[in-house]
Length: 228
Image 1 (cartoon, helix red, strand yellow):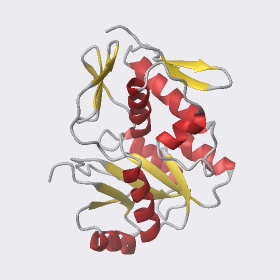
Image 2 (cartoon, helix red, strand yellow):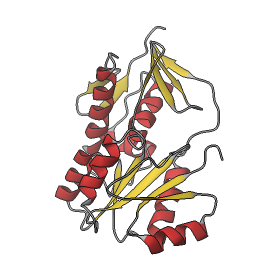
Image 3 (cartoon, helix red, strand yellow):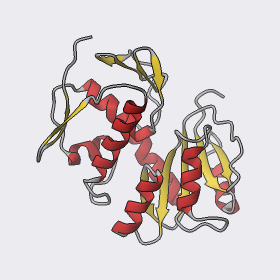
């Protein structure tokens, strides 16, 4: 089924996997373990992983998801133990897109997915392409191209760049960007936005694309208009 929502859950959470499948039969629940394999994700995917797993730590599983070709673009939510600043820092450094405090159960997954979908984290319906200079985003295909060449981005990077291209020449504070990406500003440090921007800049640099964002001291970030 095209555009089927995939939910990746650690394989040791057998009861949770069954509960999600029964509650949301329209989703495909994919068990994941340390071997990963090829989950054959043919649609948007979100992973929920525990900070402390039975087979390996959530940090290591997160890294493996980011390294594997088939899962590197999955939106990863790390379920932290205490949610203190050190855990948050390590989760983001390992490649997580978001975090929440445990336990990892049915209600946590359903509630967080509802937030993502309400905030537009799920792929949008087909729309026209948006451009800024040599950067072109196809929102329907969830694809960025630079001078015609595809540039893979993580979900937060893609949504961040799309937001700026849709709103050029406007300065956005870190708080505003957190709200735009569907984050709870009371549960995440505003400086995390700097992590998202840094990842976006590095992804573009790897593919020879220029840095499209300008840092405005004490205010936030802006994308200047660029002639096509």
